[in-house]
Length: 299
Image (tube, rainbow, N blue to C red; front, side):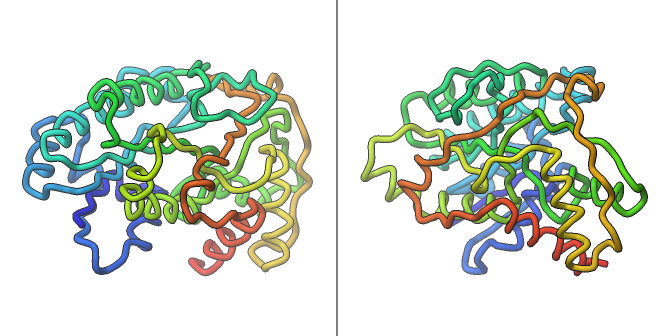
């Protein structure tokens, strides 16, 4: 099997590289090596390597900056996947596209299923929703692509919410985090494992089941940014990553100024992927502790 990974220097890309089996013909490219918005660049690499799967982990992910850099955001998150799909379709390979809970508006009071209507509330979410539509327009009613939506993705590598909160715990006595945004935490490690499960077993699952090409995955449990921030302090103190956790005060989204509006409810329904694939259910606090231990090991 030939597997091509884009965005190899990102949080998820790093984890996929670490987990990819040695017997796979694996080609991974950083943004500098493969610009997914450059058709000629994509054409050369895909036509030469002829991947059975492309895992597109390349994305514009700065939610607030997307409000002012929306042209760049849409170019990467919408036009990039469309270019990959159009080129890949000629060579018979499949695409695994990583998408997001932000394609939904957050007005639901039950977990979002795969077939719920897309209605994003910010430019980042819009760009990812348009990226999904672009892929579906290229492939039509075929099984040659998978869209994998996830939420609140974090890991031990690169800049993210955990790293920011960890620094605040180390330097401050107290700080504030919003508590009225509810969702599901996802570890880059568990999501990387899911990506591999899909590319290795999708053909068998697809052949045996009449299913849509869209899946949701996140770690088990529902939480808030405030609860995650508090747990980062408690667990980090337990494992010796910091001396003492700071007090984490609860505030509403309206008290925290940001350029982009965030969905207040971002819980994804993951039952479908667990029904079809052999995927272990991991509680989000266990995933968080694993991340913090990895951060400690890097010191």
